[in-house]
Length: 401
View 1 (cartoon, rainbow, N blue to C red):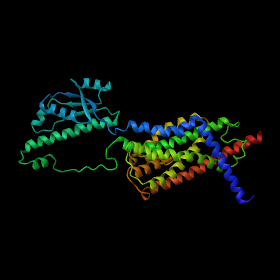
View 2 (cartoon, rainbow, N blue to C red):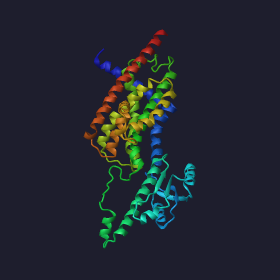
View 3 (cartoon, rainbow, N blue to C red):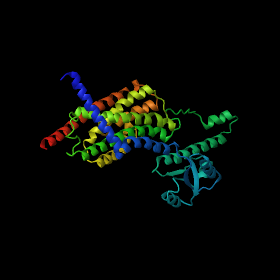
View 4 (tube, one colour):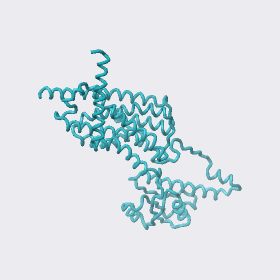
């Protein structure tokens, strides 16, 4: 057989596997949902929920044991801020805790009875802040509002005591050292702009793994031998061709969904998007391939359709933490960082955030791209190994028949 006919047969086998896999994807409702509908709809739901970026008007309760002009001024200043709303006044801390336990408020401001007395004596006064830590965004609003308003009140009291002759001297007294705060990469300081880009890339990996796993489970159920590869189809004659044919099918679908996730969704919800298209493309190609071959490897380890769904949904939240976005990478133990290297989302998320949110160039994300190519090659080899094992099982079953 000539080399031309040999490669022609290989191409025919690959295209046959691709056609059958594509038909199975669009005829199987479960696979279609995870590979197409979930990547299209799920990001919209997440982005819409976090579209406000920050939490405002967080309800709090005040326990004012001082009940003086200064204490009432502090309460009014906090209530007038955009992040806090004073809804209740309590007689004591126990009553305030009851309101927190019933989730009517998210924080407590406790002003002691000697608040004004200590200030008028020139001593340091204290305001106790109790926060509901179940929601970090609410905690941030309640605590930072108290700190900011306390600083403003302190600056005003210092100005009165200084008895300056000009507004310039008042400004220096209120703020001896001027701090120029410049927010980079996340100008709104919002939660959505920080976390959602990572979630988009994680959704791409998880949905590919789920769809590929469910498709593999469907193949096991339909084949008479109960294995991943049919024993009665002559085109399924090589593990490498099977892997290439299936990967071609998933890559065509992922090319559309990844463009939607990486380009359309950030613009629809005004998330930071500073990177060049070329750099984003060079990052997405190895990431998609690594996710596909990772999903094919995992799909061979589960026997039933439901198993892969339980597995991938279970690891979704830990994988988000391991990327180093919602939890600092420097604080992740070394053992867990080693575990994170097994998943394409770790390097894909880091590279995507640096490109889209920080405007990084190809050279600056080159280490992540190299690791993604290494993962793609490694999982390609593993997928071929496990499919070769499945191929031998199918052939053995056919010989016994």
